[in-house]
Length: 228
Image (tube, rainbow, N blue to C red; front, side, top):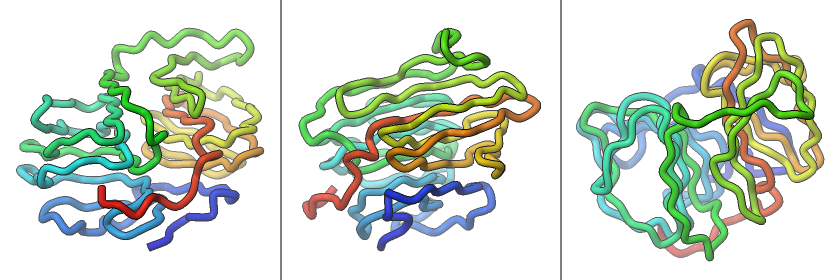
């Protein structure tokens, strides 16, 4: 399957309006945002686990990055409540599921193949500091290396957010709302800005908290054919 696989194109999706598509695992459904491949895929998705659902134990050959949006995600390593940000690097292994049910935003097969850094953070515990050159924006970094930077930003109500994205970026609204180039971005809305693009947003009346990944789109492309 190829979905939004032309990374030179801007994509904005109101994910709350998208249908849930069943996965091969009972009780697990997906909203696919971009994808190259079948069940082993370079993919960005929102995934919903029904209470008691579980995947078999598996290895992430290309790495896995996710945010718990609602509920509690679980595996043999622990429980991850809403607001958890997790990076499971290539070659990591787990058996994911959720007894109470949960919804996650997840990216697969998008790591540097040599990356082995594991990260578990709670977004609610981050200290967001004002950006000196960006009025109305406070931010904290979740992860940064030569390949990409992953941040949380808080935009003040009505704030005008203009920023060049020479290396491209992805954005997920975690709370609040905004418009971007005049299009609405509601809670859990997803935006992909291509390399050389520009973020041109205005925060909604309650402001917006957003997850932003910059830089990784320089490395976008098909995945290796071995199994995840």
